[in-house]
Image 1 (cartoon, helix red, strand yellow):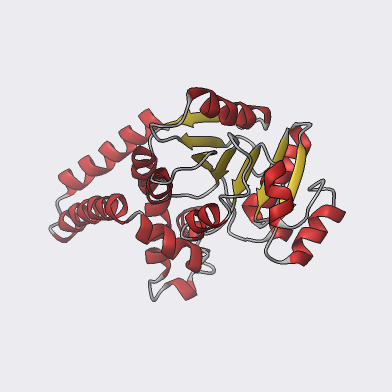
Image 2 (tube, rainbow, N blue to C red):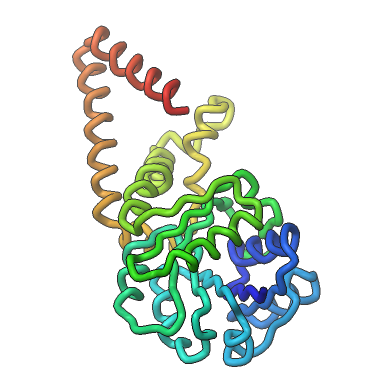
Length: 275
């Protein structure tokens, strides 16, 4: 099978490396910066490249690895090139805006939103890894008009790539869950290091500081789009977080040791139960 990777940054190149490591598929690749494409070819990360109008028609499955707002535009702008009945997917961290926009189009191929759930605090081809998706989940978010055999084909490719888990859900449920499992953590980490005490942490910090602050190392351009494109679920999570922080603040201000203890016990119990 021919698999095309469009966009050879951290995620795209890591997908290509994972495909090379775990499958025997023929990997085509393209990047806006031609020197990156050439490096990927020389490194053996991809097997073939060329102009988009030459390589897109060869692909049975195409992964589009761009920032959120660029994905629907790329798919629509290149609609004439995609192989009939092929699968076009993406790797973006939000799904509703992309999937629902492309659902309106009358394509002769099938767009299925996807999210290979892994990342790093660094970006670009040089930081891509063949092991990035080890123990990771691969989430598919087909819309109602996608045939089951096409969903199964994309899930099957993820299983070949040795993702630890595959999940099929709606774009809306994906975005609701990602607001909780990923986006709110980045909001919290960035808020945490905005403290005026943060520059003086050396000598006073250990695991707690490291764990909470880690994902404050963020690509602001990309995450600005992700946060705004997932506004409603993320704002709900921020409201819940602020509400819980205010409960802690109230107990501390009022020296309500009993309620403060109860809040921490509740948090500890939930964490023990859910992992």
